[in-house]
Image: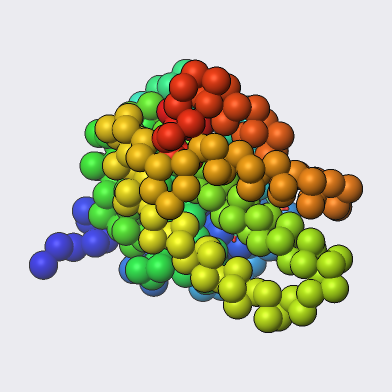
Length: 288
Ligand SMILES: NC(=O)c1ccc[n+]([C@@H]2O[C@H](COP(=O)([O-])OP(=O)(O)OC[C@H]3O[C@@H](n4cnc5c(N)ncnc54)[C@H](OP(=O)(O)O)[C@@H]3O)[C@@H](O)[C@H]2O)c1
């Protein structure tokens, strides 16, 4: 049996908000040594009562640990915390666990490399309540060596997915996945708003809208295959037919609160493809 006390890294969690707090609870639950620091000291108090060691500064917390989680609000907070470190961090790993952009992930990786440590960027596709359960997805990118070295610890938080050596890979995955949600949710909101404005029973309408969302989910494998092969069969409608519907939608959505969702740009792209003799292809051609 592995002796967790001897083999496990000493961990610091910088930022004990909702995500940081959940991470600390999970690690403590596994018997890990966890040092915590939070800008607002009182917010870490419960965690100290639960067994975490309090640090008086970011520097103190990081000094005592080989694995550091920066579970902070944003990159500005990450920068401020990293700015408090001036010592050599060779042999240590810093995990940036916050929602940020690709360029922020690259900057974080550079700053951490400048301190001599290895960097892993994390994209959190999970709410605090599911951290440590199978429902949590956390995406990691950056140093593959550091990821492998700390895999056992990362596995306590979620089933970890390493998505690439480029430091920004996890941020790109994370934001693109949020984009799927925003586009679908805003598409639904636009439809409900339009139906409501037309005096349609929104509840009745929403049942058919759900079926429509289901069609998108069902078509995921075929869409991916079309993109990978660069072949865009028309399926139920070709680009000429799509253009007619898209133009009607633009007219229907004119003046609505949530705007047109970028449909004029889509229409222009379809028109260009049709002018190129590709009107018989399917909608995936617009992304080709
Ligand atoms: N909560 C979710 O469901 C969820 C889901 C996916 C991704 N995320 C992402 O995870 C990250 C953390 O989210 P959260 O829900 O844990 O947020 P949160 O509860 O608001 O906690 C934010 C943490 O950042 C600290 N902080 C903010 N500005 C700081 C600064 N300038 N210097 C030092 N510390 C600073 C806060 O300290 P104070 O206590 O002193 O304010 C707090 O510890 C965010 O990037 C969020 O977008 C969250």
